[in-house]
Picture 1 (tube, rainbow, N blue to C red):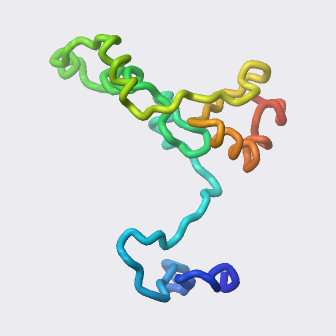
Picture 2: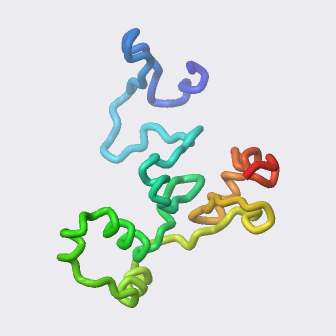
Length: 146
């Protein structure tokens, strides 16, 4: 870690035996300075959302679920007594909202149709990064497993 931090404004120190290592600033930082930027090694959607079939990018976990799908799912979770108090959902209203929302159009894995891969991404950039970093090893195309 000393080589990795040599040109950085932080250093790794042992906080204590229980907490382990931590980063400590070697200098003062201004407000909004980026102190550390790193790529994740592993990401996983929380189980509740996975079981609810919430659509997220398989790389960065950004939501790729539309406004209508999100609202319908949220309504289903409410008790019937609460649901009855809500106005009806007009799809036209949500279609209009989606034009203003900054929602990505889901990009499927290149092997979705031919090998049944269900991974979706928020952009071609995320799809390509995922393939290079891990999906190329895990995809049904390369494993033969669904």
